[in-house]
Image (cartoon, rainbow, N blue to C red; front, side, top):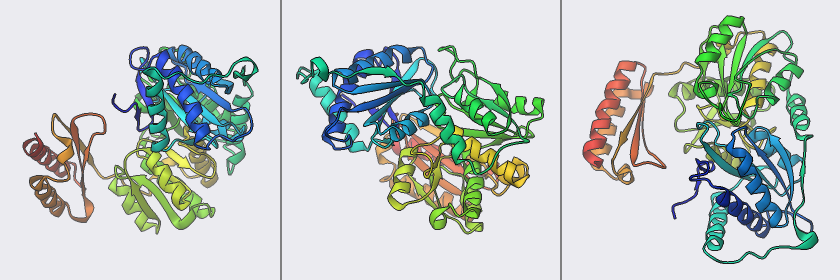
Amino acid sequence: MGRLFGTDGVRGVANADLTAELALGLSVAAAHVLAEAGTASTGHRQVAVVGRDPRASGEFLEAAVVAGLASAGVDVLRVGVLPTPAVAYLTGALGADLGVMLSASHNAMPDNGIKFFARGGHKLADELEDRIEALYEEHRTGAAWERPTGAGVGRVRDYDEGFDQYVAHLIGVLPNRLDGLKIVLDEAHGAAARVSPEAFARAGAEVVTIGADPDGLNINDGCGSTHMELLRAAVVEHGAHLGIAHDGDADRCLAVDAEGREIDGDQILAVLALSMREHGGLRSQTVVATVMSNLGFKLALEREGISLVQTAVGDRYVLEEMKEHGYALGGEQSGHVIILDHATTGDGTLTGLMLAARVAETGRPLAELAGVMERLPQVLVNVPDVDRSRVTTSAELASAVAQAEQELGATGRVLLRPSGTEPLVRVMVEAADIEQAGAIAGRLADVVKSALG
């Protein structure tokens, strides 16, 4: 069996790859592993927080997860449709032993996924995921579980207070109100369709919503952070100061300025980094991002005297680096932004609120604030059907990369990255000139084909 857990939980086509049986079994295994690993507190009945996004498949998968947890003796607080960061927050705030979120994030509606959180609302380390997967497989193939009976089985109740508790948390950490701002919110017909408009309105903004009518089938369908066209048009149409876009589970945030121009995760990080430094919250004067961040982001931070630490692609690796060294701000170009003093994971609503708060505080347009960095042209080419394992050992490829880097000099960059899930290599080139970036990327892609094909 291939590894079930990917970079962000277990994900696949619901009722095909991700079945009710798999959801139930993984939930039982997670309850046992987290208890044995000491990430669940001892001497009391375990408690789990379970939430989901609005996908139709989330209804039966939630039932399976709840059944699995209760059968393992875990009491379940069912919080319903809430964002992933809300489940993480409530897991910590309620002192729960684990949290479970059912979502496939930005994926299309037929997919779904399971994310587990340990006590405190933190994502699981690879080692714990491996143990859950191994225990699940052991029992799937015949080993019987030790099951509680009678009063030992878990109890299940709805926890409707979670909505207001999470919104109150968001408002409570804002440095200033948003009065006077008109903001368009694209909720991707997802998990933040109620939470985000409520939070922005309570903070004082005039709110216009799109993509805020989830029906179980329309999540991420032509809207949200993966389809910014509607938001760009709506911001201009309504004369708004800015727009905010979330994905299906609202753990990411992208933005649009008043002219309808997209503001990506790198630019949001740059704006927040300067704000946090000004207010004394940017610990060690350092931001954490992945190797996919635009070179313009790095150059902007250098110019401002802020250090950049880069990690492998994936917000979990950003978070690990932040926790290990005590950094306060990190994220990805895709819009996963982690403000560690207020969240244990990327939080799209929190990020959007903080970005809007900076606009309100300074009285400066978002375009001007984001202008602290200039995005260099970036070309990405996927080269399929090659041996991705030899990216770092091919002498022919290393020579071609060295030549490209010499051509680009200090204002360009080359990154070759093997896909984590497919037999392909991603060739990324940044340069001051888009034509140069495209030409070098095409040339390197040809070398990848010949050297690794």
